[in-house]
Length: 506
Figure (cartoon, rainbow, N blue to C red):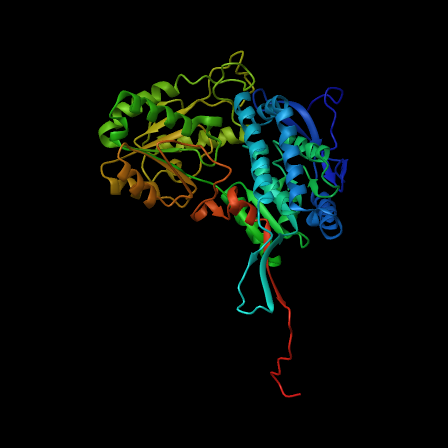
């Protein structure tokens, strides 16, 4: 434990416009995954704190001004938040790096994307028409379909992209006029706390934005079942997502789930016909698998490569994976940081061990690196790992590892490539690499995944819609559908000349 003179607990629970400690007085140390040393202490809330935050959000929605604030004013506030994020970019990027273990450059990019999300939803809601007129066939009837806020939204966010994932929920919820309670991951809560501070600075009315720091089994579970919550949005693992849906069912809440992925990256030989094409495909396969140490729901963890180029492709992939510079994310030149926790590293190690026992061939990585000045001994580092000769019977191919592990499968025909890519219970994202435009369209059309990239991997657009098929979840984030998740649709039918109906004798 850290000396209390070095670290002082912050009041990180925000309810009804006030910051406070947990009702129980409990706290949690936040560890830097690069050295496993504590660098912050936050309040450790529980169900009681969740109840207080929901009550504040309920009052703000039922009695406060925000749901009735004109769209232009809500949009203006979101734009102010985007400006504040840009102002604090360096500080927030560094905080995201220390909290989640990613490189500081990745942290900066995350903050840019968060600001883009706020700007996008501000522009989207400001440009909307007031309602869609429905022709009722009579000049005496005015019929219109309008959108209204859902109400109190509970948001449960993951540890890998703490602020980015929070923004994908908070920005559209606020744009639509909702109030909310957000529960960040208990191990990476700091930038979400900072965002609430920016919302307050931007002038958001008290009670609209509420935050409870604490674990999922108490705070998250209570939010999912709470009768005064109208919508619960969860991003995380499949098992937890099922529990959220189960808890929300008795009160028939709206539920949005963004869950796991086991994402195929399909490389046809013609994509590698030139040296430039080969180098690009290899480089993007590395990016797909190892950005943020593979702790990405859309990571291209399954390389499915045409047999005729497999040997050369895997050899170069393994060579370059072995040269990735591991270290503390705040150090210049570091390309890959630690895993988020010792528990996560142990999980990755267990998957690699099982793969080798099942016949996979280790081409690179597969172990903890030697400690160094930029890789402290206590840090949760694991080498980028390439496993060749994998097949669908292996756990490491079927299940989400969420670490720097890339499996290699091969195919001979287009049909075989599609069959392998779709042979998963998940359906979040995937990619196809080919120089043949017709093949690109065919394969992309046959892949059962929510996002398909062609000759690229990982980009997303705020204007597009993000979500998956199968066990990758339900609902959509970003784009117009992301805003629609936080709304109810109402049909207003106005008869301008009412007359007696006379259905019954009177």
